[in-house]
Image 1 (cartoon, helix red, strand yellow):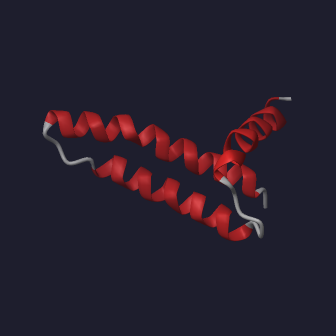
Image 2 (spheres, rainbow, N blue to C red):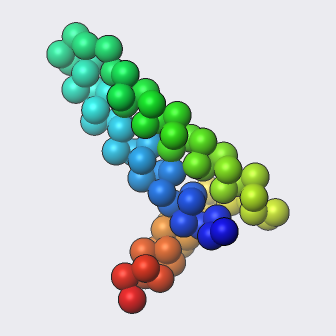
Image 3 (cartoon, rainbow, N blue to C red):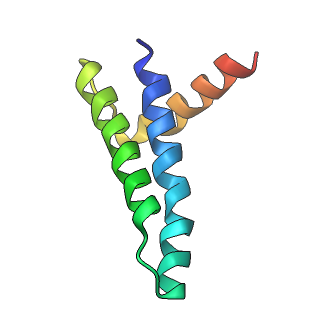
Length: 74
């Protein structure tokens, strides 16, 4: 299991839900789907952190992101 891929996927899913939350709140709607996306993204991040013994430091996140994108683009 590639924990770096799971971590980056969780960050992307959680990050993409932020505009959806803001749009729903601006329109006066309840952000149901965005809330589910935040939970899924957070769950993926939590799974990746729990599976990697050394964990992720805050300064490692850009490096991990670039490595995962580079690995799957090449």
